[in-house]
Length: 163
Image 1 (cartoon, rainbow, N blue to C red):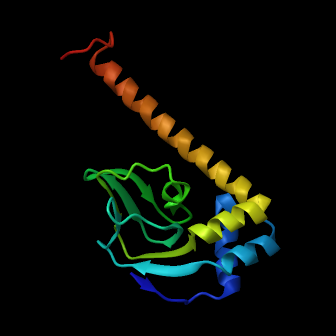
Image 2: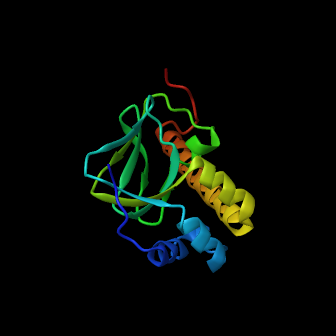
């Protein structure tokens, strides 16, 4: 991981404006949040976090792709405009068998836990964006579960346990 500032404050704020979860945030709030964000870059294949070394910030992907693996299985991919690390910041993540890995060279901007909490408290537009983002993630997982259930029913039309 390399921490380096290559983007100006304006460029970080513009990058945030392009993200769905920041659409409800006014420009002054965005500039304040962008000013606290750190740029971090990860090489392809680099492990970002493990169950014993969890993430300690909210990352937003500007370029690249990050895989969220659980016991070696990819359960989610974060690409441009997506975030990762939120559940760890909120203290609701089960990290057993977890790993975050950059699949390609990845450029992110990140907000520490303290700055995240301050942004949620001080900037209602940001808080709403985070809640909407969580809702979209929950909906995506619900659709995946529904799809898997349909596939299981297709194999066993009566839903019988074949064990």
